[in-house]
Every structure is written in structure tokens, then in C-alpha cells.
Length: 475
DNA sequence: TATGGGCTGAC
RNA sequence: GUUGUCAGCCCAUA
Image (cartoon, rainbow, N blue to C red; front, side):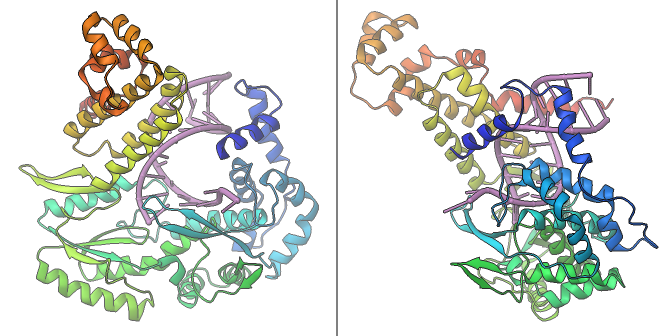
């Protein structure tokens, strides 16, 4: 429903009908962006941050990124598409405020969204204008901090993928570090101490007081709750473009400390794993690290969720580990498997009445392909088979329910080549659809080949193709 | 190689 | 009311 209204909006804004955009139209979108209201000629006396922030190129980049997201509204209800107009009218005033360090961000709108594990994530959505300014902040901060960040930090960083972090963990285990200290920072984003964050930023970019003030004001902007404004004295606003890099700036201190102590660790956002050789060493190191985090960094460690244990038992970024002859193997964490099954199940329920080939190609395949592309690095030969069969079972279930009446079932089973007697016995049984879709007559009526010809995604073939590609010579 | 659309995953 | 960063893949266009 949400997606539908979004899609309608998109069709409405585009001048052509439902066809793909012509190159002229796509350029027109970019062209509209380039004639934006941002003034040229900041003539920076030196490369000061405020000038870089106000630099036309930076702002245009940010602008393009924000405009990409058209259709979403900010805390003030302004549509992103209207930002261009708004900026054209008000840019001079805003620029002046930014230069004098007087710009005041608006309160964020509080929103709760469900997490995949069942919990809720609270976040504050800034106004469209504030998202825009924070985006340019991010683009200015990134080149400054990116070279400083640790090689063991993988979250929110350009050109760094989750699988890199997982492979790093695998390397440690191959070297014999087979106990992991899983450090859970409780509500990390809410606990970020402003003073320490600000002093880090000020040390790295001395003299940029307008920017420091701007960042500080973003840190201080409160959330609207029941019409009341709540001030914040710690934490970074989740939902703002600059929050991820701010979190990395804070946790960089942890990376550096762990490296100084000679630990092997890998970190993805607030998910930090330290690898050691024995449990005893792990317990000792954990106590010491916890002390550092809480006393030096002023963050909270969640002792309940943190643990020192074998990596085989835990999960990291959706993956888990196991040990085999050759060393450490990756597998899909059990929770990730149940999650994809749940979402396929839901998709199938929604797509029950729909045209099957279209349903497969338009909704089912893209979803499954996305999941597979993330988890394809795991050893999942067996799992791929299981998922394939489970998936076909689900689709046979749809097909069986499609034949609403007993005689349709009978004639269709006959058409599929079953004998009259066999078809009759199956068509008129009293079992439920899930039983029938898994039973032999539906396997006969709709063999694997049938779904292959429909173009249904197959985990097994995708896995084989991926491994073939891996082993293929480069060039 | 670059734009634009879609989908998924991590946090 | 559905945000953010990052990444991957698929598709379209030149």
C-alpha cells in the first residue's frame, strides 16, 4: 500500500506514462538539479570547512542525493521535491546563518519502525532542509576522516562491505583465535557523549567554529513527543545523514585502543568483536575493555548481551561460523534463514491470487535474489537444496489453492498426466492445502522443470553459477 | 563508462 | 508517520 502510493507519486511527477524514462527526461532531472539555487563564488580565502560546505559542487552532490529520495516528507511535512524551490527562495538567509554559526536546526519528528527481530527502532526524522545540510556535512567530513579510520572498521564506510568484516573474522579464527569477545554497546546511538565527540572533531579540524557549532546544534536538536520538545544532552539523532560518520568518529577511539593493545578485532558500527585464543584470556580482556569503554569513552556496555564464547555459537552480520578440515567455514545464521522464509511466506500470501509468472518475476525473484546475493559467500550447498524445495512447495500451495473446486483439481491433475483413478483420489481428499502441495501428486503435476521454465529463482543454480564465476580466471 | 528505476543485506 | 549511511545484485537508457 505504501509502495503503491509511492509508485503513483512517481508516475505522477514524471511527464511520460508508464514507460521507461527517455534519456532526455533523465537528463532533465539532473538538469533541474544543476540549476539549483546554490550560489557560486564563495571565494574561500583558504579551504575552510564552512566554505567547503557551501561549495557549489558539494551542495549539488548533496542536492542530487536528497532529490533521489523524492516522495518522502520531512518533519515539517515538506516534500523533498519542493526543496529546490524552497532553497531558491531562502538560500541567502540560510547561507548567512550558516556562515555566522547561527543556523538553528528544526526539531525532528519521532518515528518508530519495527526491526526485523521484533523490536522497535526509534528515530528522529529531520526536516528536509536539515537532511540536506547534514548530507553536505557528511560529504565534507568523509574525506577528512576516512584516512584516519581503522582498517578493522567496516560499517558505514565507502567501498567496505559486510563480507569484508566477516572474512576478517574468519582470518583471525584460521590463525587460531577461536574465542570471540562480542561487545554489545547498549543503545549506542543514544549514549554518544557530546563532549567527547565534539572535542575529537575540534581537534581534527581546528578553527572551524561555524561547523563545530552547527554539528553541536544538530546533536542538541530534540525530538517532538506529544507536541512537547524534548531536549537531548547525549546521543546522536538517528535518521540523519551525518549520524553514521559521527558514530565512527566516536568509536574510532575504541579501534585504536584495541590495536594498541595488540588485539585482533573487527567492528561494524557498534557491533565489535575481539578474537582471542582462550576463554580465560577472553574474560580478562573483556573486563579490561569494558573498563576502557565505560570509564574512558563514557559509553555503556550491555553485560547481558555481551559474551565471551566460541564464534560457532554466535552470529556476526547475519553469518555464523563452523570449523572444518580446511579451517573456518561460513554459514548462514539460523535466524537469517527463518527470516527469509518468513518473508517469502508473506509474499506468497500476498501474491496468492495473482498471475504466477508475473508474480515470480516481479516480486518473488527480486526479493530472493537480493537475499541470496548477500548470503552467497556462505557454505550452503545443502541449505540451497532445502530452500529450493521449500520454495516450490510454497508455490504448489498457491497453485493448489488456485483450483478452488474439487472438479477443477481433478481435471487439472488429469491434464498433468495422472491416471483417472489417481487424480480422483487426490482431488477429493480432505487434507489441507499445505499437505496437498507437498504431496506426490502435486510434485508430479508440477515438477521442478515446470518452475524452471517459469523462471523461478533457484538457490542451487545461483550458487553453482556464483562458484563457477569465483573459480573462473580473472580477465 | 555514466545516469535512472527495482530488490536485498548489515547496523 | 517509514529515516539514515554503506554495500551488493538485477533491469532500463545513452
